[in-house]
Image (cartoon, rainbow, N blue to C red; front, side, top):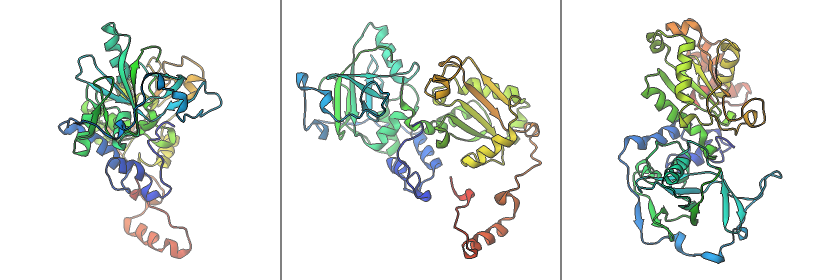
Length: 397
């Protein structure tokens, strides 16, 4: 599933607990806390991994003709699959020709025969960038490793869109504050987490290959937020909801600063779309939505309310028909039109007055219609009146 970094907990307070623990955060951390932690390493000095002489992953070794991938448990997940997917959440390891950049990434791999996997790697992804570097040097086989059961933080970072040229092992170290323990592979100088449960080694033979890093696509919204801020857009927050498999991203705009730009809806939306849809962070995002002060972009119900009532179909939708796109969303792969281009839109849910910095309106639901003391009085007596306890939207993220 797009946006599914890990199973979510049933308790609302600890909904993202499993993901939070992967980052060393308390189990009741909000999604915003997790996103911010994922970005903290960018402002810290990279911490190179600690190379050990050996590790748990070296305890048992199978070499050469003794290798048979069919002996490993690999499920055929869907009746229409052409084979069994041995690799779904392991970390692929590739290195640039000069050895300065080691990329860790997650993309699926199906068993082809007893000693080969077939994988998909999309154009523009970091693994394909490294592949192209080797092809330019005339190399058709590249040293490769695949590590299963790596530390949780390594899995998440491998699936996040960190800047090109930064090695994930160093990024993990900066994020958690200590070096990651790694060991050298048996067949190459590639480094893998020392406590990996299983490590596969061999060569990658470039062919026709799409990246499947969408498991943590929702985390790309924080990367997108940083991108927009770097380019001077007055965006306060960004959120790619799990309900949309992270194919939608809601942006909260500072309308006071927006007014200072003296821009129009068409100009503003086109600038955002041309920047965002050409960046790796928005690889799986097909709809960008702009909201003002009155919308909680982290509340999916609020997003749907505003989209339904504030965005006029056709008039407030700015289409991008000639943008490269991954055909993973069904309406791209099975719908009408070119499956690899277009299908992107910026939906403007800002009223014309908001482009002038004016906000002479407000929602009329409970959270926005009453003073805080009145709301607290209602909440405190809610269960006493026989109603089921509900969490305040203002307290949930």
